[in-house]
Image 1 (cartoon, rainbow, N blue to C red):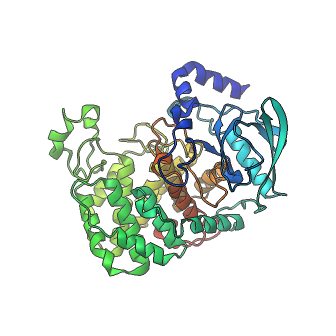
Image 2 (cartoon, helix red, strand yellow; image 1 turned 30 degrees about the vertical axis):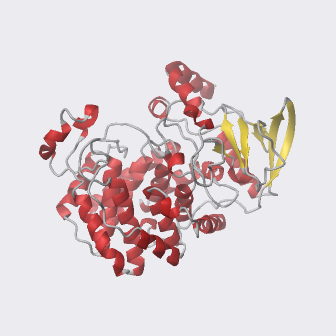
Image 3 (cartoon, rainbow, N blue to C red; image 1 turned 90 degrees about the vertical axis):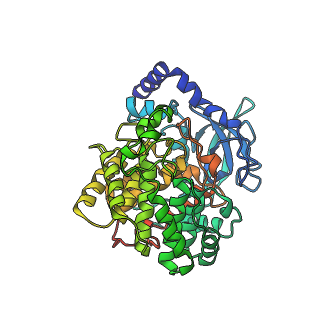
Length: 488
């Protein structure tokens, strides 16, 4: 009754948003233009390692694509309607509607429904005889279709620590990335994380090739995103290899970030009044926006945290960074964090799901070293990460960015509850995102501006999970190499 009442309230309170979200904003039929999913007819729900992709209805999936070499080929058909799994019908409806409406009015609603039920059934079947039984309606006729899955077991209660399944999935994700010809052509998010995953898995020659191909000093006017991601990757690479060839670029990137920071808001009056539309007032001292020249959109916590993480890594390499600027950046982040550990978009005010910002802020503070201020802040944001567990994939602009830094940050928080809340609640979601070939693919969230699938449908999330599932044996600083890891 309570669940039905929630759905009714969403329908009454935001019918227009529900309509937009329910049809995935037209993206069920909008394919990507390149990469391994360009033949898929739209931004569909991946049904785990079955090899099937589908539209998500409130209490069912409608099959719209089958991979030729997958377990589902020859067993499922296009337009099959899946109404249940392993003998249990989908009874809890998936709640559509813009995620900010859900976060404010319905904080208990996550991805319960067919998504979670299907993901849990994958876990059950892989831990048993491997048979995933789907309740299917085909051209009006009801039947059971059995999909054979590999019997790889279940996740350990401490996963990704002390977990054979996590280790296996990390290996397969890394193997998928190894030798992949598309990494160099990916956008900075996916290129960086793929490079880090290669380093973490010991693929040093391919990582070296990527590092040397990306060993380019930044041009004037470049955005903060590519500078920060390039600096993170090259710094982790340098710390492992001491390859002096990349150090001048590390220093140049670190210096370029100094031009991106709003050092004193008074210096930018000409850029923040009358020329920025309705966002010009959102510049704050110490923050970073999109562009390294400062201008346009205003300062944001996500780019500030990303730049701080990059700066801290470059400092470990020996690069010179103005510490006063670093301190200003951390002050901006802290002033944008509420007493519940929520981190806002421009300031501390609520806007969009926060897991990516919380995770990156955690990474930056962890890399900055142990101090009383940092310990207190990490504890505060760990609580915020726990509260963000249901919105990990409902992120603004790039949902994969949220999954990536939310999970990595939860680990670096050294807070058992934050890590367990994030990993345990999203276990079924991770099963759904896993493809039959060892890769992971972005799944639609509820943010109407999410473009993560179209920026990198596979490599970004695959690299993320290669890093997350191998955190027990950290190779990189962002995996917790500096931590003395005990049982989690």
